[in-house]
Image (tube, rainbow, N blue to C red; front, side, top):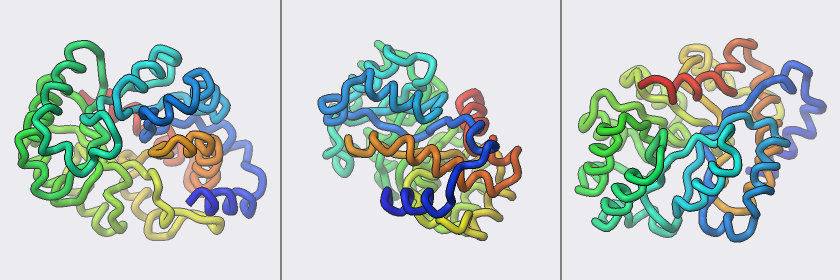
Length: 268
């Protein structure tokens, strides 16, 4: 995808003055154990500032990376608690009862705005671990950053109808399914991380553009640094986001780039 982003930027040419002024709230970043070992915290902060990322929803496997980054850039970092210590646990964590102790311990020590990003599909939501995760979020009124399918989204809202949920990658679903899900759940937002189908060198996909126009308050950008090397493309992704957002009306571009994420965090 990075190659496509770079190619798109090249074809689009210089970013307009309108785009350069656009503040970015990156709603999908990780500073996990492997990234923390390879890229010093001060370098990560410089990457964010150079990219014009004014705010960032950050989670990590383990949570130490998030805490280091928050201490280094408290004006940027909006901390989220990921429920597993290593990225390799994304398919098993929901059956590990030790996760409950880990969540409760970290929540007792630090302040967060969200729990996630967590991976869960379908009936995974009914496991004891995830039900307790939802309870902990409800007790503290925290956002849930969920990576999974529509069936899992339904079960999250079944468990907690008043939940605020950020759907990672818009569920990797098509525009019609995303639209139906947003219509069903007014407190669901969708990040656009790693969506190569949404925009290209020719601009915003028409079906996605219709979706942004219909739900201008529900989308936000994200670069998803799921591997250490992706940190070096945060600036490229921010510029690409500004480029395709410049095809939209100014007010909607500002919402998707920054304002929607601010409103989502504040909606308690």
